Length: 122
Image (cartoon, rainbow, N blue to C red; front, side, top):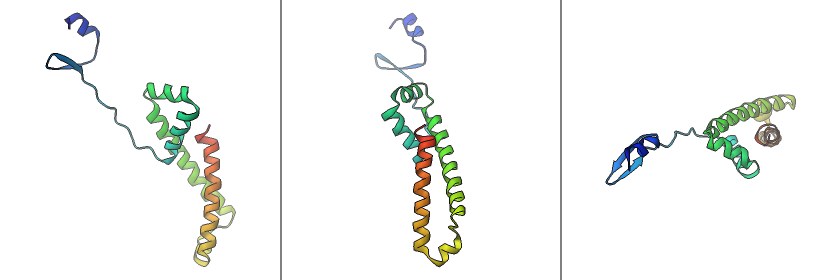
């Protein structure tokens, strides 16, 4: 490869035998929680242009992490608020565990639908 062509390519290279190979590094990715995974799946299936733009721009990981944090915060906040409004307390948990589990599952399922609608599928 001519020196002038090699310099025009940019980046750094290492020579292995007769070949110059680019020094590539895989960007570090932060683990994404369940909400970020749901957002990724939604974008990949229903919002392909946005997914590709984020992916190619190197912003997908940050976007998914941000969505995951927002969704987790909203989920926790709404579960606490609704449980308090419906008098689902530690006293109920101590007196009737089955009723408490049933009520909390109901609250969590409703909150999941709210988070999905407001953050994940927005």
